[in-house]
Image (cartoon, rainbow, N blue to C red):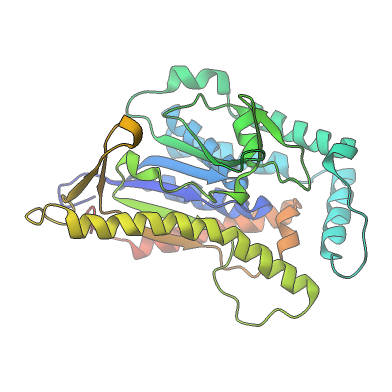
Length: 344
């Protein structure tokens, strides 16, 4: 609670990272259960988008943290390679990806193999089994949390954040955010062609202030630092991909930090820090935007893993990541107890 006895308003941003975002699912289970905080927005890209939409849908249903935990657990259980044949292909696929730089392996376009269609259709089925997208418009209310889903328009090169405030959220939007181009065909939404949001806003953050959060919690998958110089080709590729995954995240965070600086510098000097605001005129006659200070807080996955394991769907690996996410979220909340004043 803040110093007025009200819940601290929180927006949660979920970075993408394939199977590693099972960590995010575990963290969300614990974070949403803390009644001192009100989740006013969720954003996500790729696997983070899946976790975000599952949690958001549970909040729309107004069934609370228990329903969110049920959806997150169920989806990741269904996404695990549980059958004998599925487990075999999972191990083979991991071996192929870990062999990059060691062997010259043929590159196969997702447009040239039926396996890509099968995997994308399977993901669609799992999404629609867990989220009744057709019911979302009837569940949305003015006070409902905002959802942002990151993708990139392949043809125009423009970043795209599908927003529940502007768009009717569909399974295609989630698939667009998860369409890693080496594995899946691009996804067509409203006449545009989209790839995985890892190439754009990972995850979308700069629109989160519209939900007026006191804090933004970032669930970061890709490690910020490495302690040893990568020298093998596999390690070099791993680190290159980690850095690429973080570039857009830090750009998004920089925007919020810049606005925090401008609020402090140009906002009403007679107002307290948490009440100080800055109004920015809208572009091309659009609606003006009001900014205030927002604290950025991090929950990082620090487990040492290689990049190829982002494709690992073995049940034991998924379970380990989810449990680890819950522990990291528990540690985060314990360090935040008692909850600080909003904006403090």
